[in-house]
Image (cartoon, rainbow, N blue to C red; front, side):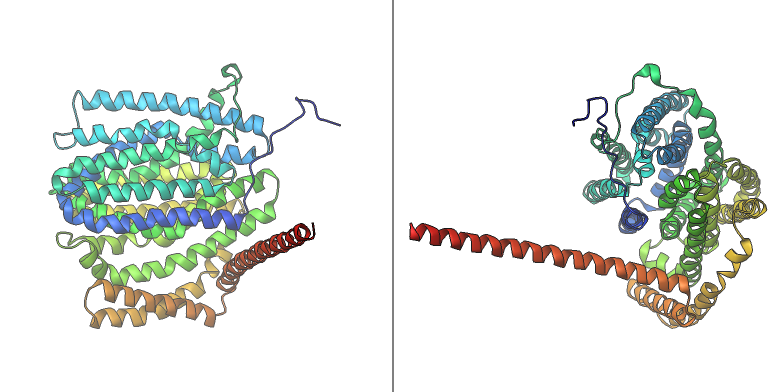
Length: 530
């Protein structure tokens, strides 16, 4: 019996496991981490602190318009796609509705940006940079990562990231030669952003079907996306607005912004190690919550909390000891304030990590956006006040203090909401961290004295880091930390299984070759007999 044409359905995209998605997402995030580690020392010496400061200020301006063009639709879209993973019709409708709405908000954001640039302007040194960087705003509606994240297919995103990041890396070293090439650097970054978004579109055909415009309901997404946008806006205020206020209030704005940009970049690169699992967890938690699977939701949240403790605590200790060493050889001369800024910002490794767990992996995933909104709006207001009073006196140091303080405030408020509504046991979360704190305290002793007696260089940094990592994870084994041991066993088990599969495939291929040879010899014998 054959199915009629109307009964035939396209098979849904193959859903990858949580472990597989984590690996692919980790690969993509690690590349995002590694590329700045390669380009930052080069750009720090080529563009100098003034050029980097000008780019930082112009980029902060563009961030606001990119943010308004996105309007929270990416995170919201990921959650909605996750809910309709197995329903192609509804998934397609959501996809096209969000594409249209993002196109409208992008046109509005560009209109305001160009109107300001060609009238009052942003300053003689910044207008041309802002026009070049506006390509990143144009790229917003073409960013469809939310579709692949919602489908829990992080392989496609990882492949795209690898291609575009490597291409951008090569172009930076080829075309950016001195401080006068600042505009070339801005163009390369903007073009790579647009290109990375466009190369995802050919893969949309097999995931999404066409939906008639008359079937689209655009307005239904405005309110929920806006509720997600508010905490994102607030986070941007105390993460990006710092750079804008440094440009407006600091005595030496380009230099201060240059130091702040490098410190924040290095801190954010390391922070990726803590937050790398978030994208995977949001989709899975949204799906589990929609299915009513609270046990799995709880398991994933406590897993994420343990992960933050395990990675975040040693990073704080490492940056406290090694910031001067890292800055001396990584950035070179001219960035004297960077080590202190990195030490102040290092609190983010734990605080921001838990903020992402409570805010994104819990409340955003289950549709309770109002709690992150309240927390981040409070922090944004406090941040503006702190910046206003601290930056004129302390410069970039004041901005770093304001950022760290507001991260603590956000996470504290989110933790209180999670505790009051019984989503998590804060006592259990806090108690689970003692082994990581103790192990990091033991790690501190050898790396502190090694740094005291060894000079600053890339080789001493690598040596001290290696010793710290070995001591830290050895202490977790001594403490018999179940989370670390189980995670290590799972990783090793996955590697062994992949190696076994490769061996089996090789044996099968060899057997096929042997059978083919035997068949050929038999045929030859038959021919001889004939």
